[in-house]
Length: 319
Figure 1 (cartoon, rainbow, N blue to C red):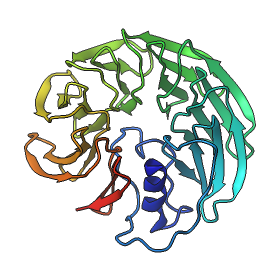
Figure 2: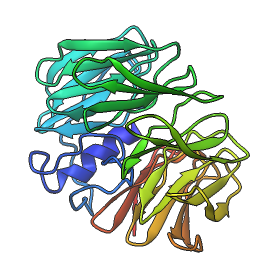
Figure 3: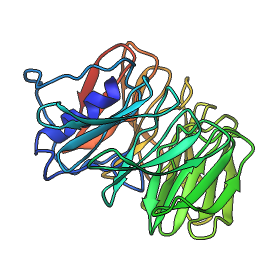
Figure 4: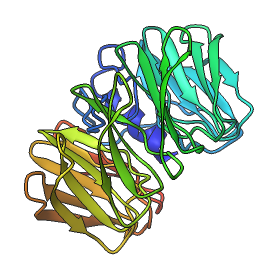
């Protein structure tokens, strides 16, 4: 539920019609920087929408419609201003990945091992692609291809129009990290503990970097560096071209949360219950913020404010 509130609140200040967020982490580079100023005060509840399952998926907002998956196995399309249901789509799995919307099509993965392409206006299925594992990775769409990971250990690239496979890349662990794309390169983590950099057109490996823990975190690309967290409790900053380590930052908890990057700073939550703010170039800690929870959602940045949720049940806004 925290991630759903996070996306809706950040967009509410400037209006969802003019400020759209069509994918997880706001953009293909997965920097977590949203295109509007966020709210600085909490006012009355505007609306709420009940499903038969928890919300773990982050929402995407396009054309005044909120698209979000519930653990009842359904993807919902809701009017962003009223919360009224426009349509819903049922998959054969329980958990749904954060959706992405490009060109009037919603792309979303499911625990049933499929990636679905749906008409954004009607929810009608256009095509579906079956993998051999659950699909929790949020798809990234660029240059006519949709990229996503599966629990079968592969990263897939499909044709956006037909769902036909362009290429696939095999890792030695489940791929739940959501891929980031920058300058023709796809960056994705695997539970084999590695971050991979692949040619977006061919799937050929450009480099790989090994950590000492599983990589659930979705990488963020900014300023010639790639930032990614690991289950070893470290945040890594790597040269985007070579994969060479620039710096690393260690905490007392695992990194499952994805980093956000803006204004020369990197923000990331750890399973030690803290949000950390680091210098993006050096990794030097600038400040930290402690919550009473263990798990922190991926932070989002809007208008100089960092928004994030904690398992203590609170949504936080900090500067």
